[in-house]
Amino acid sequence: MTNNSNEVEKLERIMEQLAESVLELSDEAIRAEITEFGVDPREEAERIRLLLREASEQETSRCRRLNERSDLG
Amino acid sequence: MDDTYSELPVGDPTSNAGLLIRDLGLAINNEPKIAERILAQNPQLWEPLERFKGLLDIAKQPQRDKIHTAVDNSIPNLMEIDSTHSGLDDPNQIDCSAGTVVSPPLQTDLPRWPVLSLMVSPTPMNTSNRSALIIEHDRSLSKMFARILKDKGYVVRTAYESEDAVRLYRDCAPFDVVLVDYLMLRRSEFGIAIGILKQDPTQPMIIIAPEYCTEDEVPRPDELLHIPLLFDMSNGRLRKLLQTCQRWATREEVDRAYEALTDTELLKLREFGNGQVYFARGTDRRSGEDLLQEALRSTLEGANGGGSGRRWNKRITFFLHLIGAIRSISGRREGDGALLECDTFKRDADGKATSLLANIAARDMRADQRLIVEEKFNRVLGQFEDDLEAVLILRGWSEGLKKNEILEEGLTDNQYRAAVKRIRIKLLSPTNGKGREKHDQQQ
Image (tube, rainbow over all chains, first blue to last red; front, side, top):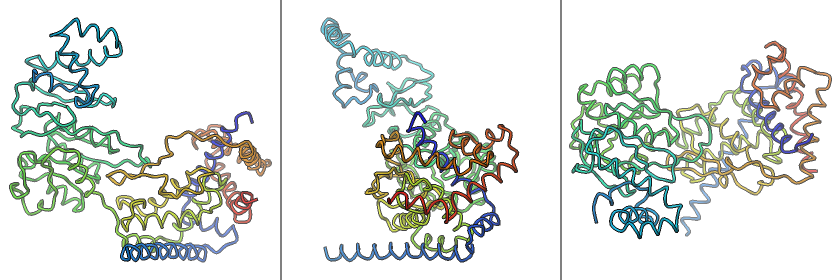
């Protein structure tokens, strides 16, 4: 371990490949892996969808606040 | 003053440097001793002066086959313009604001137009280039448009004949934009454009029609009435048209798109995000879910017209858009936690996002952080000390090797895939990888 900045790059490359490898999975394979984590893939997907809806609502609220502020201004 | 000199393209003639070189060029003929003295005191002026003289010599030739015009001395790119005659006596010759003089080609009776000045495009955020097809019989114009579009990040294909255009479109469509010369269209009785729109009614297209000034003047069939026309060759006008050609999604479309993501797409997005932040250097304490939420929020903001939001170009799937968004969000470095994503990206007029950090080398890390990174790396390898195939792959990845290169080390495809799965399961498992990393950071 002579060069720490190299270690950083190495970690980043591993991370990138780790993430990319997920994209190469078939639908069945990703479901199987999620199941191996001990989680129901369908429930997990639904939970993620709810998180996205939450993000959407947050953005809607933010826009509304901005509009109200500009109306007041 | 001799107009010949003032019209020569010496960088920016309106700048002090441009004026100095031009005056020096004049002085060499009229006041050689003064010029020599100035040059003796300022030897750095020799190079631009030689360039000026070279351009002057070219311009004075009665016939020329080719002019290489340096549009901007600060830009290494040269815009190559074929011309069959000297532009000096040509009434169509235009001195554009950037100081560039180019004669339009003789083969067509084109009106006066300023040549578009080239721009240095910022580094594109992602590597998925946009594509353009230029259908233009005039090679010099075709090259000019190609250069401009390439500088804007487009991969460009060109067709000089109608037959080539049809073949290229058939083989390579869809394009993000098709630029088509009006004269060629008219000659083909508009068959090229109509044919393209028959293949893909949504194909963005721009008709180059410098012979006209207003839309009403341009005779064209009903099928092409909605196609925007490029009359003047200003960069701004072209940029505006290119912008209108983009298929930016509206808020409603983004809402529909995320609701339409399948279960497996959602799972992949989350796991992709987890992979991106596994070592948590870039995005500190966030998880893949946090990244996914941020990617969507940013996209919705972009769709709402928020200047710092991320806009979804519908030429790619929403899934791929989110992948790109997650990737760029996770590219931030530790210590940037206070920054919002919008602080690290700028968007050009085309809507192309550019990471302000993209060209900055990895910043120096504090000694304690370095130790943490080193420890993490060793810990990851240590988790697989009994799995030689996984270690081989992790070491290969860390060295930037591709799958094929790692396979050359003696792994079969099946062994590779199985080992990658073991790596994923071990590192990304909620009971193992990301969650713990998150807590490690907080301690």
